[in-house]
Length: 262
Length: 265
Image (tube, rainbow over all chains, first blue to last red; front, side, top):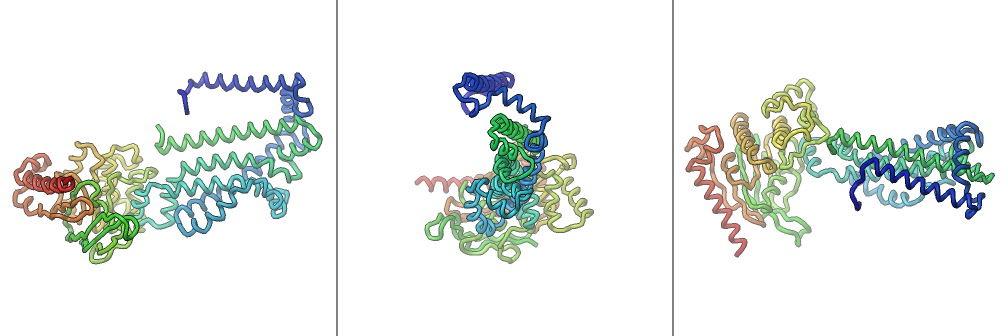
């Protein structure tokens, strides 16, 4: 990156400035009528809709309820991705045979966008909880696997040699050498997974028939309620940011604990 | 029991036929409880010799045997002390030392006893629960030595173990290693490029040539050490002042120097 890091206060000020500029431009474009209102609601309309939806229901639920329903699917999807991806990645990092078997299939599958799985997710796992979870899983799984694999594969060779000369078996090698060595990489992968999983949410909720932010947005789209759609987008953005900030903190804490950073 | 033997060992890195020959016809027999140091210029393949005994590398030709058995894989009967310590950063000192013992499936009480005596042996008692990054380089290498010694290995393989330490720490560690070796004799293969260190520590010193590495000369230090009574001097600098020590050191220097000059002709 070019340039020196600004003091925290100044960089926050700049952030605020850019937000205000963005909102100002948006206001000018909409209020002046340059962009017709049915295509883009004004910031004020969106804000008032946002606060309205916090308490009054749309499409059968309030915004917090929609968010809660989404978050539950999301949490299941990402946890499942981590629970399968991380162990599989570590095993592939240790057993060459498994690596050779899984990698070609995986390398093809991971380029298929999560939303492409929508028809099959609905067909195989239904539109209740299973289908959406599978779509979120499809988004969150690849980084979990790739990062665990890379973390395990690129452990300092000396440490593997040290463990081998100490008579360490495969299980212990994976649990006590590869896994802890791969933790920073795994955490970074989980962060990416958490982001991609949350991004897959709207796709996942195209097929649900009950609550969820994505569901809310699809319903609003049907009745051309742009302010409601925008509210859903903003809610997704805010929650995504909160998830990322929390995971960053967790990663920083873990790195400090491991003495990787002062 | 822990003898090591190299017989007609070649090592070629890279594809067979077009690879680089790193070792050429290495022959060396190390007796049980003998301390042998290999000295040689950087890149002469001395570390490769050690890595073949450890089971990290296979010989391209010839055989490396420990106790008469051909080495096929690494194992706790051949403990290695690495130049860069290779401690597990996420394990405490105690846990680092414990891993090899747990791998042997020893009961907890026995492990605790062994760990305590290993910590004591290396003066690490007060650091048992520290993580490696909290220790100085010298302390980290003590942990690595404790981790190797605690396994009661048949042979101890030390790959420039003091190479990453500062000069003062290095001297302290050398003296401690001598004390350790006298109290608890073990077959040791010690790799170094420091001539004094080799002469001070070893029973025999093998001098290697530049790539492709060959053993040029093997010097018997032990008989001179015993005849001249080196062990009566507790401090390394006193030993290094003795005429017999200086003579050996100079001889090795000259032998290595010939190598260098030869290289430049």
